[in-house]
Structures are given as C-alpha cells and as structure tokens.
Image (cartoon, rainbow, N blue to C red; front, side, top):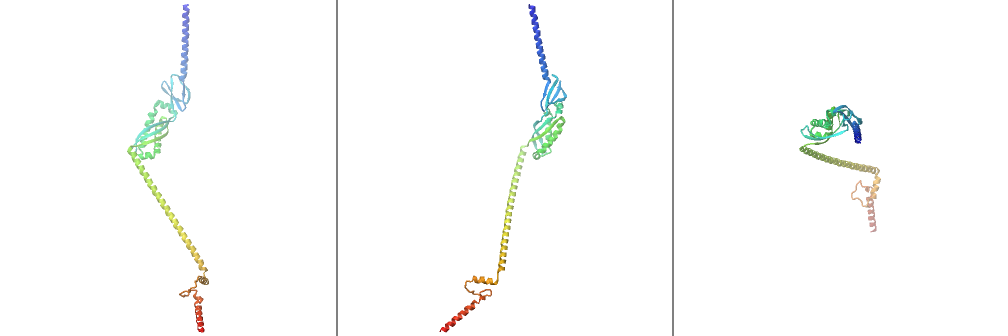
Length: 303
C-alpha cells in the first residue's frame, strides 16, 4: 500500500515537472517571438547590430523580424530636427559677437548605419556643434559688426553653405540655418543706438526741410498763377475798353457831337469863345444884339 502511494507521488511530480517545463518552453518561445519582432516608426531607420557588430543594411519603416537575443535594432530618426546653440565669434572690426543660432537638419536614411557605426548616437554633439561654431567664426570674421546686422540674411546663407559642405560627407543634410539674434558688447550697443538716434534726427530734419520747400514752392506757384490771372484780367478789360472806344469813335460825327452838346447845354453862354465851341456857330450873340437895338429904337420913338 505504501509502495503504491510512493509511485503515485512520483508520477505526480513527474507530471508537474513536465507541465512546468512546457510552460517555460512556451514562455521562451513567446519571448523569442517578441524579441524577434521589431517595428521601425515612420520617418526613421532601424540599424541592426548582431552581437554588437553593425550591419551595413538598415531596416525601413514598418514591421521586421530579427534573430532573437542575437540582433538588436537601434532606431535612428531621419526626420527634420532642430539644433539650437550659442556661438561666439569676432567680427572684422574686432567686435565680440555672441550669436544665437538654430539649425534645421536631418540624417539621410542611407547614412544611418554608417553614422551609428562611425559616430554613434551623439552625432549632434560630435559633428554638428563644432562645425557650426567653426562656420560662425570663419564667416563673421569677413564682416564688420554693422554689416552683420544689416546683412544678416546674407551672413546666414553663407554660414549654411559652409556648414552644409562640411557635414554632408557624414550624411547630415542641412535644411535651414537661422540667426536668431546677434548680441554685442554694451559699448557697441550704445554706439549703435546713438547712431540710429542721430540718423533719425537727420531724417526728421531733412523731411521738415523738404516739406518747407514744398510749401514755399506751392505758395510761389499760387502767387504766379494769381499774378497771371490778374494780368489776363487787366488785359481783357483794356482790350474791351479799347474796342468800346473804337466803336464810339467810329460812331461819332460833327452833327451828333453838336446835338449832344445842345442837349446838355444849361442855357448859359460860355464866357470864352472859341472855334471849338459849337454854340458860336449858332450866331446866338448876333440875335441878342439885334434884340437889344430894336428895344432902344422903340423907347426913343415913344419919347
């Protein structure tokens, strides 16, 4: 009886061990399958390493299977990334320049494995940062401080061209380079501010002078126009008067003049006789003398 119990216990133990082994095997298979599945996100490249050795081929976006526990996949982003930093340089006129820059860049897909193998995941600090600093120094040294401000776009384009030429060999592509801000010494900023104030005052004074000139010219033109108008009016009146005088002169005759004189005579004989007086030609004096003689003769006869 006891022997039968021992046999049953032994069988149960063996069954339990088998179950445990099966569970472990299933778990191992599940873990192996899980470790064999790799998903590469959109805009990224998967760099495969086999026991630490980097493969020359990279995985594209999507689902992939690798050798479990032997191969690993490092995800390298090929999206546009931004690198912001502060770069120090010296201008052509020996002004210290502190520049805040922003670089938009991306890793080329075909260069992902090479960059991971030769540089690692710190490619931004290893390659991009020192190249940006060097480019800023070399380009800023070509311009004086004022030109760096007034020609910022040209300076940024030149730095981008130089930067792109140096990092392209590593498989890094520069999309855009922006100069966010230039910062100079306090003394230089004060000098620039004073110059701007002086230029603004000069432009204001010049504008006021130009306005005064325009006003003076407008007033002068108004006077000229008024004088021309007056001259034309005087000439018009003179022409009209001359035409009227001509018409009157042409319409006058000796008879008309004599008639108008008689019409205007007040009955008083002129004290001075002249050939120009038309009343003389009327023999009014002779008639008065004849009347006086007749009156005297009548008085003597009556006596």
